[in-house]
Image 1 (cartoon, helix red, strand yellow):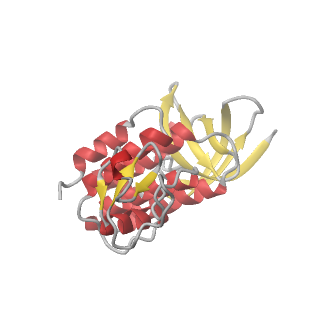
Image 2 (spheres, one colour):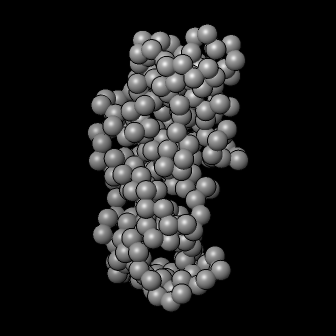
Length: 248
């Protein structure tokens, strides 16, 4: 395959040689791609080509079939998201979203993953400071959902009975959702009350109405769920994020 252009988000970069960089990007049409951006360090210093973490734009690259590293022709940036670099918790949340994609995504065309990535980064960029923990958790949950790993919150994952609106359940990580009161002894996770269940549902769907008041507890549930169903190893970005979150 020759020269192609696609919308893409830069997830990670590192220097290569004296003047170039290796960029890891998630693209709308070609999934996860790695490119050599030749000479960009000199051009970036002159302001010709802004290449920063979490910036979006049109990536033109020479795509080589069956190879993991391609050559970038150009990156036309249209969304820099400098706000993420100015707040350490915003940056940590964005890094966690990016790290999950870097670990779990492949070269398959998955526009829904690209959309969830853009949505999560934009929410983190624009939300008020008090809402940053909520936006970070929601961005991670949304990416997890589009990968196909959504927690079961409406039916007991053991007996299949409906969970009443006011019923407290218990999270069963291995089964991937909540159990009812009667099946709680078979669960390996924390008690989830009605409010927490609503909050998790809103975080997963990206329609949260207000900030959550126990972000560390929510992160603990999310991280354990990821370890069972999505990731083969702990993510450094999640551990870093946990240290930054307020206790209450």
